[in-house]
Image 1 (cartoon, rainbow, N blue to C red):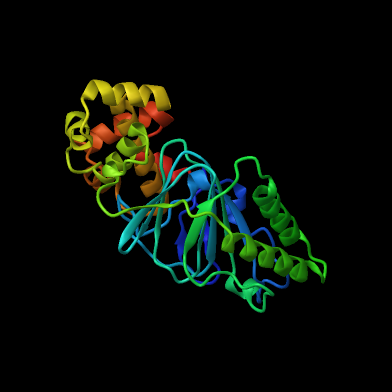
Image 2: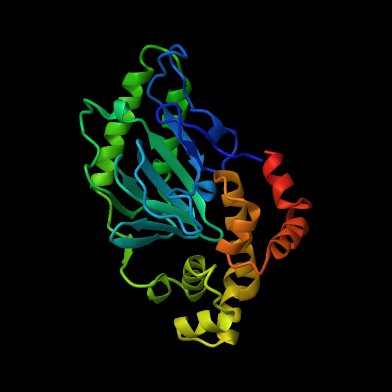
Length: 298
């Protein structure tokens, strides 16, 4: 089980739940005493960013962030807005921008984290503001560009830095030509008409895990019956609405056990479990371990 890593620059714990790439940068050029600028490529499904709360709140980070969504929906929260990124979306967030990222059910893709030092003196600078857009579904260029950046980051030859700068300049040009697609949601995520019903339900449920809302309450907020909601969830995810809520609550509990120091009892209260015993039963069923042993095994 992976719990992220300690960031060399800030000393803060980073909560990306990702394979071994999340534990170390793709490149470490130079001595340990003077760590060099780096790129890191992470799986989007495990990229949860924001404050350490049941529902992450916007928080700044010291790297530029490039997000590519290939499946499902990523929820992005900014101080004054919320955006839902669907498949074939590309989104860039410059360092210093406060945001929260939460992959919803079945979300997949990649996240490229770029050290600001690598973006100095580019022939075409990266945008100064967050922006996103739609990719051509059949265009392999974005995927190949990320792969090439990852490959260059592994190299230790003198020209690797120049190659990375060239690729980042090309990335800046592509970002400038994106077709706008990210949907801004000012009200509750459950009211975004552009999202399928099942995704609106998941986005809404993510925000109400701890308030005691029933499936009937959520269905009423969405303006549908529980039967219609169940049918949409079965069609989209192969599960009933109540089972999706169970998965969301358990996934958030796993994330909080990995990324925070909150006690299992407090996590249970924050996520709407009736008791610590309720959380423990769910954990044992899903993982074969109690919450404390799950955290201790990391």
